[in-house]
Length: 147
Image (cartoon, rainbow, N blue to C red; front, side, top):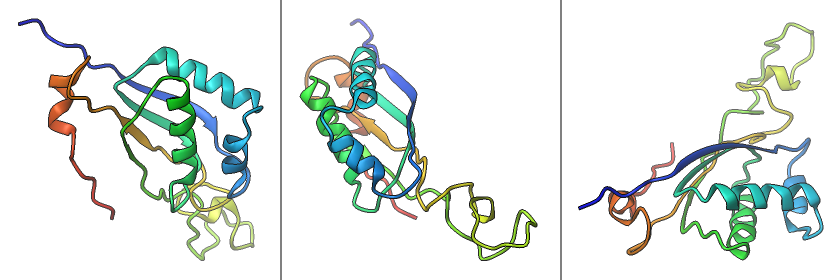
C-alpha cells in the first residue's frame, strides 16, 4: 500500500488590521484585490492542514468564516476551523514600556492595537475519500478545548 501525502502549510496572510471589524469589512468586499490575491495563493498551496498567521481574531470567528467561504468559492474547502483568542492587545493595566501611559499596544500581554490583532487560526480538511484521507482521519472530529 502506498503512503498518502499530507500537505501542511503555514502562511502569513498579512490580514491584521488597525482596528476590530476592519478585516471583516475587507473580507466581505469581493473587489478587494489583496484578499483576491491571497485566495489565489492559498488555492495553489492546496494544503490539507493550513495554519494562517496575522489574521485578526473575533469572538464569533466571523473573519475566519468569511475567509473560509471565499476559499470554498475558489474550490478549496476547509471543513474544520479553529481559532483561539490570542494575547495580542490584551491589556495588562500596567505601563510595561515605561512611557508614562497605560493602554498602549506595548502595554498589552502581546503587542496589539486591539485584542485579537494578528491571531493564528488553523484550518484542516477531513475527507472520507481523496488525498490525505487515511492520514487526516485521526484528526477528524477532534475537538480543541478553549482555555
